[in-house]
Image 1 (tube, rainbow, N blue to C red):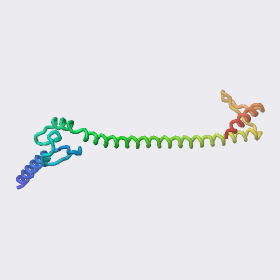
Image 2 (image 1 turned 90 degrees about the horizontal axis):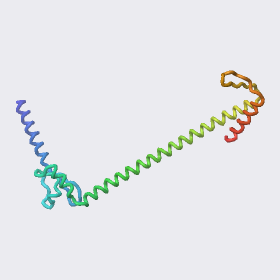
Image 3 (image 1 turned 90 degrees about the vertical axis):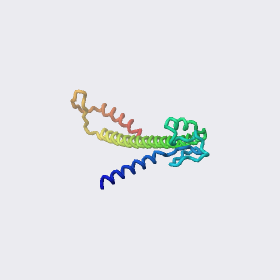
Length: 164
């Protein structure tokens, strides 16, 4: 009993697949592809039939090329409009990303300038306080700042803080 059902299902599947293979594809007068399991109407010329029981795939390619220029132009316009819209979208997205990056860079630069101004003013206040300050030379030895060095450092700090 099980074998009979299996064979029945197998034959049903084979016949269903065979009928699905017998589909027709043609281009109508508006340039749209039509798909059907029944033959196209008699008004459709043979060069517009892309697939039928009698036309092979190579014939379908030549038939597709022989379709009127109107259908090709319509498809090209649709493709161009979608492609141009996609291109415009990508362009706007890139411009927005560039603007966001510039804004982030400007904010970072403003924060850096603010921190540097605070450091310069703090150093200037330290120099003006008169407290003893040390410097380290290239050999790593510490020495106390002279009055001339302090005056030069204070002048440099004032120049730097003028831009704040």
